[in-house]
Image 1 (tube, rainbow, N blue to C red):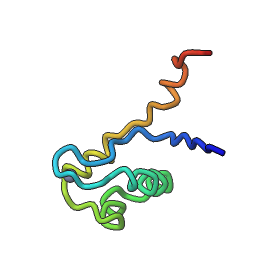
Image 2: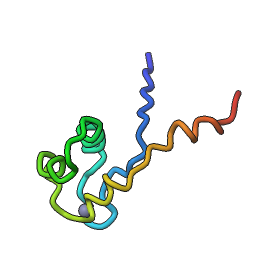
Image 3: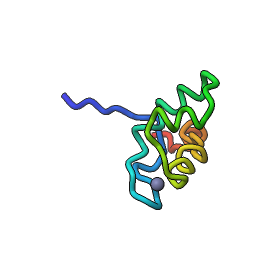
Image 4: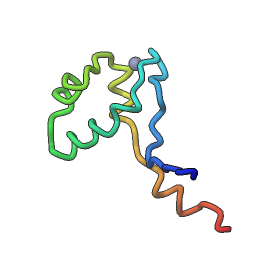
Length: 74
Ligand SMILES: [Zn+2]
């Protein structure tokens, strides 16, 4: 049996500048952001120190719902 899990996440796996793995930080970052936690506090909890990695999380926009509208119907 093959199980396919579609993850609604399009964040790059690693930071473009330094190579730190950031994809696993996206969900906790987003959850804490929804709870109105200040971004700097979130960065400290997640261990994100570099500006380049903060950019990766801050600038991320989930587009999967928009892209799915245009998927080919078969
Ligand atoms: Zn980085």
